[in-house]
Image: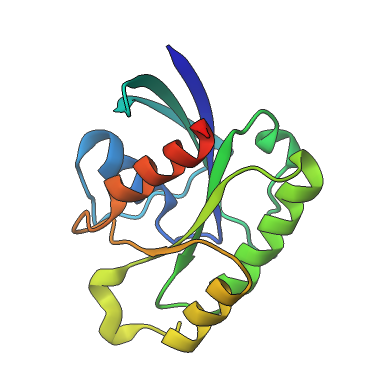
Length: 164
């Protein structure tokens, strides 16, 4: 059995916890629960014949009052930078977190998830923003924790990248 640690990183209220809950338990709650510190979940997946236990570290959101501690990142085999499609400023926070992770543990696989695809009519993140992220060499996926769109695909894709 292979074990891999994945960190969920991003601003507060971008949907990190909801993405984990959708992936692990196939549920979505409209109630907002602030993550304090770290919440750890686990899910076993079968990828290309490999049994993999994913340890999912749902880390509190970063804002001007609370910074992510580099110690939380240690031992990660991969991570998600979660951005909120309805909040353009979540791009900047996400990119800063990505720099912090690279400084802390070096280059490991990661994917940017632009969450809340079910609310695209209200998005502040434009197609140009997404293309700019891609032109920087970033892997970007659009997800909806609410509907489940692309959630499982994102975790499978990151797991495959970590197994390479």
